[in-house]
Every structure is written in C-alpha cells, then in structure tokens.
Image 1: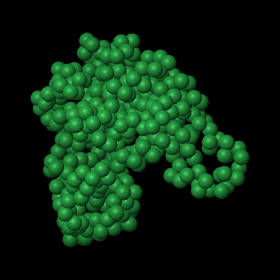
Image 2: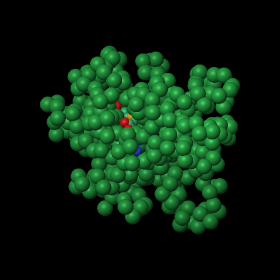
Image 3: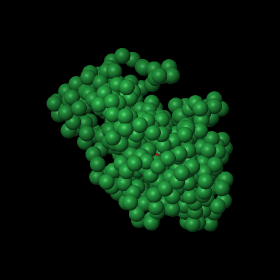
Image 4: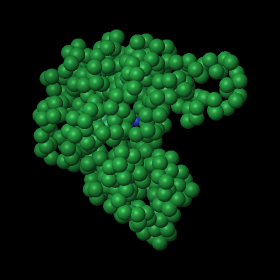
Length: 375
Ligand SMILES: C[S@@+](CC[C@H](N)C(=O)[O-])C[C@H]1O[C@@H](n2cnc3c(N)ncnc32)[C@H](O)[C@@H]1O
C-alpha cells in the first residue's frame, strides 16, 4: 500500500528544501505540486514564544511549517505526525538530511493514535512546548488524481487520507452501502449542502439502477445532473463546482475529521505544559467552530458543545459545580480576532483564501477526559 501511494507523489528532497520560501517555489519534478504552507510566518511567530523547544507538528504534510520552525529556532526539535504515509515518508527523508538530523521525529498515525505514540516515544503529559494543527488536506492529496479527492482530475473515488492503511471505507464504499437517510445527514451536516435530499436520492437511484459510482468524475457528473442548476458560487461569491460540498462532506465523513479535531484539541491540553503554545489553522467553519469552542472552554462531556451553553441542558446549568467546570477555561487566546492571510498570500496561494489562524496559551490543566488518554 505504501509503495502504491508513494509512486505518484514522489517529491524530491532538493525541491522540498528550497520550497520553504513559497514565493519563489518552482514546479516539482514529478507528481502533484507539493503543499505551500499557509500563514507560515504568523504561525511560527506565535510558536516562537513557547516556553521550551519541543514541538509537535500534528499535520506535517509536506513539512513547510516544520522546516520554517526548525530554521527559525536552531535548538528546536519537532515530532512530525501525519496519518498519510506519503507525508510520513517525506518526514523520514527530511529527518535523515544533514540539516535536520536528530531534530525531526517522524510519526505515522492520526490524532487519536497519539496516546499510543506518546507511550512509544516515552513522552510525559504536560511536557510539550508548542503544537501546530494545520487541518484538512494537503495539495499533494487534493491534486493527485489517484488519491480520489479531486473534482477536476478523474481518479478512483477514495478520499482516505491514509490511503486505506488503517482499513477504513473509501468514499466509493460509503456510497455503495450508506442508507439514504444517513447520506442526507452526511451531506447536510458535513457539506452544509442545502440540496442534500435531492443528491442523496440521485445517488440511491443510481445504485438501484446498478450504476456504480467509482470515480470522482462519475460522482461530480451525477451531482451536476441532480442539481441541474448551472454553476454555483461559494460563500465568498467565487464560482464553485456544484459537487464541491458533496466532496467536502464525503471527505470529512471518510476521515472522521471533525471527531479527530475534537480529540486533537483535548489532547493538546493534555500534552502541552503550562504556558505551552497552541496554533491552529482551519479552512471552514465546521473546523473553526470546534477549535473556538475548545479555546473558549465550551466543552461538554469531552466534546465541543454544538449549542450555546444556555441552550444545552438546564440540568447542566442548574448545577453550580458543573457550571463552574464547564466555564473553566484552559486556554487564553493570543489573537483578539482570527488571523486571515493578506491579499498577497491569497494571490500567491489561492488555497489559503479561507484559512483562519488562532493561537492560544495553555493556562490550566484539564480533567481526565478519556480512559485511553495519555498515561
Ligand atoms: C493542510 S496539510 C498540512 C500541511 C503542512 N502544514 C505543510 O506545511 O506542508 C494537512 C495534513 O494533515 C494531515 N491530517 C489531517 N488530519 C489528520 C489527523 N487526524 N491525524 C493526522 N494527520 C492528519 C493530512 O494527511 C495532511 O497531510
């Protein structure tokens, strides 16, 4: 599996090394364009203020942020996590270079694998100085047809960030098996798709007619037919393919992304030492809402509360002790308003256009949240 994934996105290290300055980045020699790090200077500026030099890059990708951090802080060490074996391979290659030897520790897995990985690395709770989460997919995933995320490049409808390494269902498997009502929920909740019912019906009708939806093009065409409404516009009034929201919904579902983000935020509070720094970069409101609620202490039973507290449950807010613990803040946000890329960055890297950065300092330790959390 690893080999199959590595071939199409092999990226040479010379390119990687020179790609930190994104303004001058050239096209890669083979495969999809490597990822251009978003809001890199700002993220590193906040991480620089961490109390020590041990960092976690929870979303290594092509390593743009990690390299900038290591170049800025010559005594820093970065644990580089990614669930994607291609990214892991890049982290391994980078960790073997003269420049970064002993300063990058590559880790393959997802946020929810951290309790195990922490044990394997003999790391203790409250010991990490800074953590970065740059959520979502990398350009290497989006642009490589074989990964199955792309509307514009036809490929197998896969969408698993780990390429199936942990055995989860591909997007094609989901569409072949999912119940119509559940599909409506997936499209509505994860894609914020208003036409969820119509699209789900079309997909189920296609299935009943023995039409298999196995490629990204087939799905994109099917959604286009279902909506039959011409080109759409996104929230910022830019032209968008009519299947964009369907693709987003499936991708989030297949990779269990929102639960992973919620878990990642809880872990950050367990892993960081007091005064440790957290930096997050999100790309849509579903992601940002989870981060915001954690930073604001708005977490009920281990999950970012989907409702404002006053509407949650009167039992919760009638109990003064419970209310106090619910309102207890573990973070102090460093930026008053979310930070977004300036127009120059957006024109250089259109993928940055919806990015939002938050930076926070850990101000108190959490209660235990899961049995399996870090020992
Ligand atoms: C936006 S890219 C990060 C790019 C990176 N900061 C850079 O500069 O190259 C997001 C990466 O996070 C990884 N990822 C997303 N969710 C993850 C999770 N729950 N656990 C581990 N890795 C995850 C993806 O596989 C992808 O490689």
